[in-house]
Length: 88
Image (cartoon, rainbow, N blue to C red; front, side, top):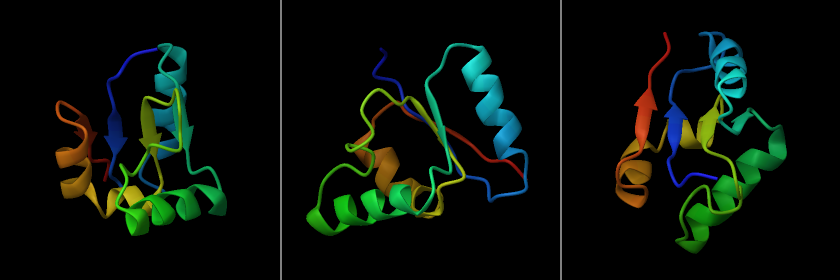
């Protein structure tokens, strides 16, 4: 497992599923959407002042998670060296 983090900050319907599939083909552990529970985990971490993706062990890439897409400045601070992909 790598410590790298990649965040797709594009909105849904902008190729996020395809990006997720590409990550998986390349061997990058990726989470796409994840349902309401993903948003709740991000919200709970935010309220508790913890790193936003702390509750997703082993995941390197994240896409189509609105709670993350809107908080790219926080992610940049919490995960130095992370990368962002904006899909449009």
